[in-house]
Length: 237
Image 1 (tube, helix red, strand yellow):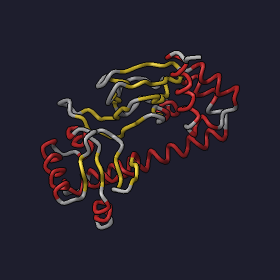
Image 2 (cartoon, rainbow, N blue to C red; image 1 turned 45 degrees about the vertical axis):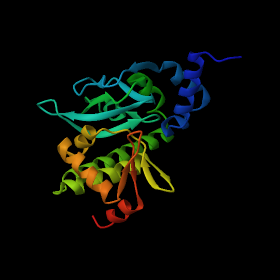
Image 3 (tube, rainbow, N blue to C red; image 1 turned 120 degrees about the vertical axis):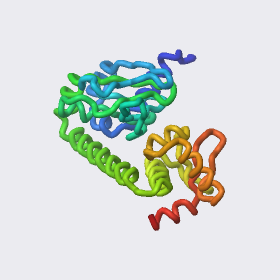
Image 4 (cartoon, one colour; image 1 turned 90 degrees about the vertical axis):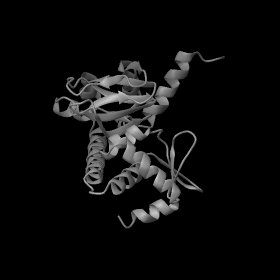
């Protein structure tokens, strides 16, 4: 029997949820009830998923696509704080302290998101000690990532900032192969500039220099290959 699009989506969503540690400690009955309550929503590229001033009503699950978490400046400039891909969650911190999210979330490509309400979160997650332990681990990871980004963007030299951010992205989204580490994110020069708090022109110039020096390679699908030479130099930053 051929599966319909809806059935295919449902099975794909189940696989995503089963691989998220927060959901792995739910028993089958709890998991199925949580799954039933998740609201699915699709967002187009560059569409806003969550505004900074919105109230804390949901935890968000990325079923497909990618989103960027940004702080918007007074003139509409973006400083990227994080990127979430398939299988990532966000918004859980706001559900815990009932405060608004400290950043805006924007779809980087066509993206499908699962929305899990605060009521469901409180009922099925806060009453489970194993799930609470996973929540603590997630919050610790968020804190470490924020510290790494803060450390990177406060470096005095623009090249050091870019190198540090690229290394950070390789730790979060890197895929190792015989050539080095491929950052499995398609980032524009503008988005990298938002991460590093420098101009797009500076990012373009620095990337060109790093390519010529043999530290990295720009692949055809707009991903970045960090070569062993790049990793070696990071030991001295």
